[in-house]
Length: 194
View 1 (cartoon, rainbow, N blue to C red):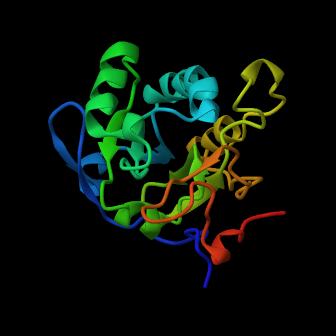
View 2 (cartoon, helix red, strand yellow; view 1 turned 180 degrees about the vertical axis):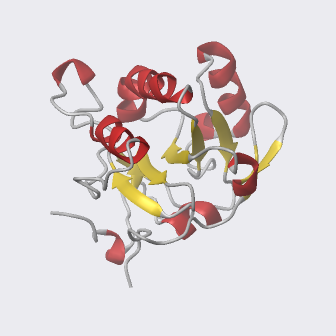
View 3 (cartoon, one colour; view 1 turned 90 degrees about the vertical axis):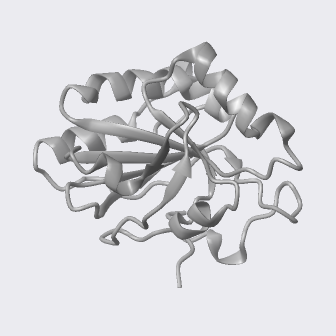
């Protein structure tokens, strides 16, 4: 069985606390024709390097009804900078155009099979997975990126076309799993494209 949610699968439900004081569930975004869920954190250089590109993509598609939901699932014992208070501070400072949720139990990361930060999942109106993987090909230094896979996937979904490249490998730091070495990944995790 694949670790990462497979194309055509339905989005696993969740209910998680948000940095704006709400508790959000998957159903809270039901009005959005397309939903982007991405696993992220506060400290990863690949996240920090691509934040503004992700912001630009989110802002580009917000008028077309696309919602972005960020989820931080990193183990906060090993990475205190990823705790909820730091999440709140990060959102207050940067005012990102997405909801930022905390997955303290890591159950949501397991359900989606999140591999890295960042790791993106594009879900259509039926909340079926139509794209998973990276946003861009050089998230650590977006001045050197040559492709924005997330932007292309969203354009195709919005236009009612099939996603031409529906699976890519996410590029970034691995999710920091509780009780594991900082670089550990589940053995079945390497199940995307090579």
